Length: 494
Image (cartoon, rainbow, N blue to C red; front, side, top):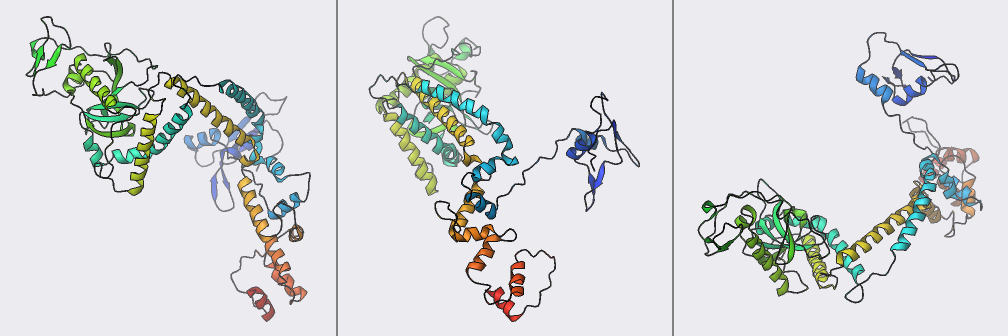
C-alpha cells in the first residue's frame, strides 16, 4: 500500500505482497512508487529506504531486479463503445477522432507532432530541390521506368532466387566457367560475371569474377596491393605453359596445350579483388545464393589456377574478353538463362512463373536505353534518393493523420456495424434507432434496441419484460438453469 505523503524513511516489512490469490514479489513499479516517498523536499538531502529481512535475506538478483527493473508499462483503458460513438456523432462540434487523440494511448504520438511537422517541412523543401529534370544523353529520360524494373526484380528475387539456388540442380549448374548475372554490394549495378570457384562443403559462397558495367563507378585499385607474394622460378611452370621472353616477368604465361594444370585450391588473392583488363574494370568476390540473379546456359573456358593461385593478368585479360564477347553476341540482352523446368528441375508452378517474370524484367532492363549509359548510376541515385524521401514523407503524413490512431480500426469496424443495423446512414447521421440506442446506458445497447424495434416484448407483462432485458446484464456465476414460465420460454426462443 502506498502512502500519499512524504517521509524521511520508508520501511518495507517485506518484498512480497498478497495479490488476492497468492504471495508474489513486488513489481519494480510498485517498489518505485512506495520507495519514492522517502525524502522530504526542502528538509532532507536524501531519502532512506529500509527492507526488513525477517527470516532470510533476499537474493541479490531479486533485489537488483526490484530496484533497477523496468516498471510496468502503463496501458490506456479507454475503449470505444457503440453508445459513445452515437453520442459523439450527434454533436456537430466534436469528432470521434478528437476524443481518441485525448486518450492516454495517443499521448506519446501527440507529443511527437511538433517535431514531425518540422521534419515534414524540411523534407518537402529537400524534395522540391530534388525535383529537377534529369539530364539524359541518349534522348528522352527513361530512368524512372528502369528504376521500377530494378525494384520489381529485387521484390521477385528475394525469396525466389533463394528457393532456386537451394535446389540440387542449381548447385550443380554453378560450375567453373558458368556465366551468371549477379547483384553484389561490391558494384553498384546488376552485372555479368563468370564462376571461378563453385560453392563447396567448406564454403557455401561461390567466387565470381564480375564485370563493372557502370563507367562512372570508381573502382578501388587493389589489383596490386591485394596480391599475395608469388614464388618465381622454374617450379612455377608446368606442362602446357611457357614463358614469354627471357626476363622473369610476372604473368607472362600463355597456354600451349589442352592439358590443365591441377591446383592446390588455395586462393592467393585477398577478396574482394579489383582490377582492370581489356579496358574494363572487374572485381573478384564471394557471392552467396541470394546474389545470383540469373544462371545462364553459356559456359566459358577459364583457368581458376592462373586466376586465383598464380594471379595472372594475362588470364584475367582473357577471361574479361570472353565475358565482353558474351555481351557483343547479344547486344542489349543478357545471355539466355537456364530453363527453370528442364535445366533447374523446378516443380512448383508459382515459383516457375515468378522466376520467368523476373527474367522478363531483366531482359527489359537490358534493352532499356539507360542500360550501360555512363550516367546510369548518377541518374539512378537521383531517382532512388527521391523515391526514399517520398516514402519517408508519406510515412510522416500517415503518422500525423487520424488514420494512424491506434483505435481507428476498431472505430471503423464499429461504424460499419452501426450502418449495417440501421443506427446511422452512409453520411454518419444518427437515425431513430441510433437515438434510441443512445438512451440505453447498460447492457448490450444494440441487442436491446433490436428487441424493441422488432416488438419482441409486446406479449410480455412489465415484470417479464424486465426479466428478459436483465439477461443482457446478468453476471451471476451460477450454472443452474432458472425455471421459466411458458411466456418467458417463448420470448427466450425468439
